[in-house]
Amino acid sequence: MIAVGSDHAGYALKLAVIEHLKERGDEFEDFGCDSPESVDYPVYGKKVAEAVARGEYDRGILICGTGIGISITANKVKGIRAALCGDCFSAEATRLHNDANILAMGARSIGEGHALKIVDTFLDTPFSGEEKHQRRIDMIE
Ligand code: RB5
Image (cartoon, rainbow, N blue to C red; front, side, top):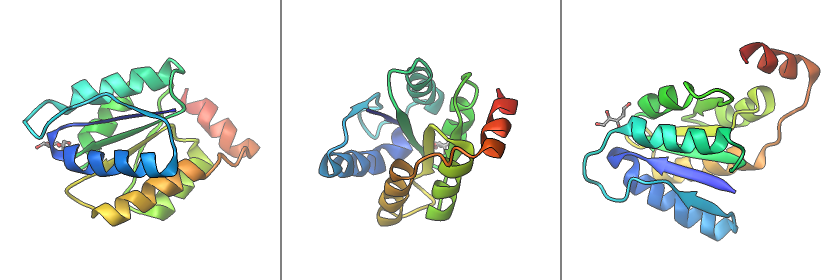
């Protein structure tokens, strides 16, 4: 189950991501926002991050203009490892090495086609489980 959220700048890309999740057959919940009207990204970053941290969702996807503000917000929540990714290599590596539980993307910095490939890579790559990576994740906490 995937929690998704965005601010106004990420709203259009979030709709495309939601359509993509439907096509993939992934279950999801949309935590808002619900229109392209200006809103504050911390509201949505926090909602999604807290829901993932409570264990109610396996992963989260957060989108704002740059992906920066919303990932900073999410990473304030204990247990959250939000990775801002603008390429598939980073999305794969952050799953393999960091066991990232939230993908953040910047709608103003990547195109839709690329973003959807990043989503696929993030959702389809398992954590490597390697001891050294788990040790480093434990050190973060
Ligand atoms: C909104 O204009 C923009 O500041 C926001 O979407 C995000 O990029 C912040 O980090």
